[in-house]
Length: 54
Image (tube, rainbow, N blue to C red; front, top):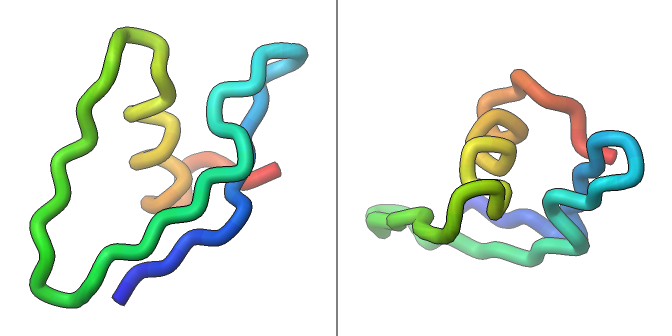
């Protein structure tokens, strides 16, 4: 299981992810969808350890 609690990420004054809570159960498949600039890539980069979480 992957569990995220109160995850936030900002770039300067722009808050990209604001207090995200997310639980993904083992064996689940998740699709991350949303508009351009919505924080999808930033979320994946933080999960991979390529970006620091604020």
